[in-house]
Image (cartoon, rainbow over all chains, first blue to last red; front, side, top):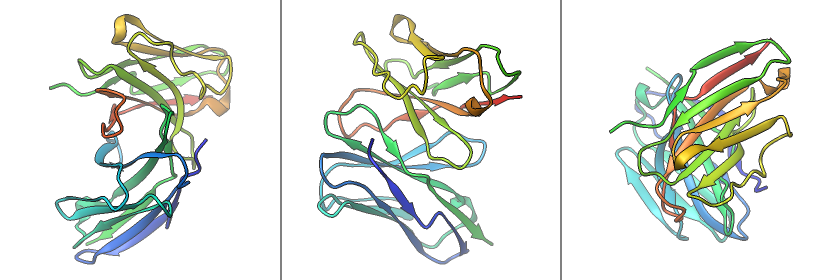
Length: 112
Length: 115
């Protein structure tokens, strides 16, 4: 089972500030990395699926980078808004494996 | 179009009872996954179905857990003789194909509480 670590576990961000957090995973046997946003009382929503080393993806004010050689991904939120408050889940899939291994999430609270 | 639908949304039952959770995936999605999140833990893989292939059951925590997928569509997760440690949010997800670039689409989950 892949060990996926996310840090920090939780963070409070002032509205308008930018923030970022980290997902680390085993670099060997890497296949794909997923980011999801999970808001309270809703279903997890797919943000990005990344497969290539050096990949950068952007969706509105949220962007992500991937380094498969050293085994980490960063998620950035630019100009945080209250609607960004959610838990951000990182999940990794190994080659030849059907399962996603999830981290415990980064819980973000944006303070108005 | 309709997303992944799960029922019931909440289930409270006594220890020792059997429970059945249902998942309706997105139409046309051949891959279906079950996960659960226990308090303070990350999402834990349970089982994976892909088309007519034998399911990957490697994540099921005990033989009290079983799942089936009828006709390549609807899936049910059954927990027999429930225990308190089975209390969790059970999430179902579906995706188009097994390729690396496909995201999984999740339902709202079933919150299971064992008294």
